[in-house]
Image (tube, rainbow, N blue to C red; front, side, top):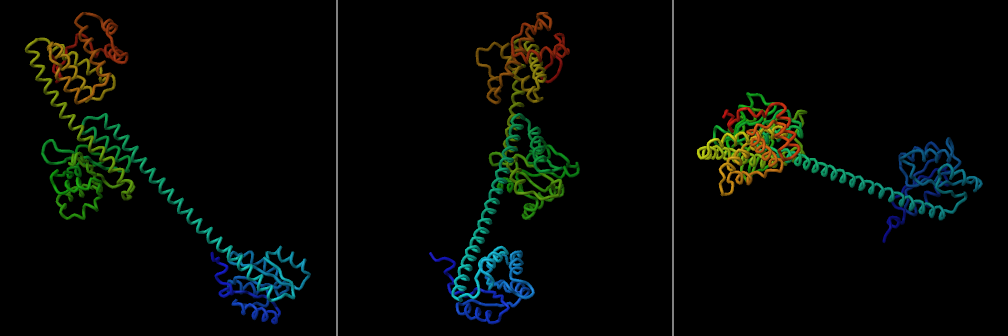
Length: 479
């Protein structure tokens, strides 16, 4: 393998600074070094030597000890203090006692020493040896710089990987939190509120709105939940579900900035009111390839632009919310259908067994009160009431066929054990109220989950379930 030192064996390209106050020695060295391809520059005193060193940036310096103005030792010390020259090899020559001069020169920073008189061949050999060593040092320094650069690039790449991992973790955590929140909600408005809160918190937004299908006008998305949006601006937030903009949002399936939307002239009629309302970012809520809603976000509160991470976060949250909106809408329709079926079923049972309705509604009211006491939200408590009503009616009917309504409802919503305990306790309470037993006796005779019985005890102590209260119908009317 060819080394760097063999690339220029003749010395061509190297500059040698010769410092000596004897013109004969300078001329001798000029001839000897020039014959081997070296370029020679000279100085006759210490101050001139330092100036030439800065001006010429030589590859090596041959420096006499005894010089006018500044000695060779002083020149050598000065060179070693200068960052630009500190790497240059210094070969000192002197007619002084060899041992004394060598020690003095080496202590001042010289790389080598040659006593006068000297052989030009020996000088050339030393010059070449020190130049080769200097080349090795340069190569090593260059390689160190390259390695330092590679290390810094590796660190940058590691930082980028860490940032990417952090971003992915943040998106995943935001998704998990939102998914957990939405899993407990079964109303589109509740889903929209939770989604909007998560968006505004994560992205630093002060004004935002969620548009869902209008209940009054088919084929339109209208504001359902908004935060920080004035009534005047909210009135502008409408979007046809069969328009060009809706089709574009479904096709892209990701958040779209306002400036991106403005590149499509065909959207002008639909886009202009939304822009006038201050919308800066549009987030489609899609499910099974159709637009079920849209979030319209204003500018970030700090005035900065939406970053790639912001858009990725918004896209991920929008996907979760789109599915949740559709599911909550299905649950809402199922509940409405179920409630209608229960009402019709109640009329049938009442016609066959007068009084069955009163007891069923008593059980239903107790079940709803227990559910609320145990922390169920309004929707879940109402569902508990309907399930209790239907179950009690079918029990009164005494039909040999499998209970229809609870079975249908169970296929739509899995009832946890707590709901079954609530139903059992509510039925037991309603059955005991006609016996004349005191509330304390009733509770002591009931079997069920201790938390449910404690909730019943609290309701009785407050008088919310007094046995002489008039039972209520499912729609709230007195029986």
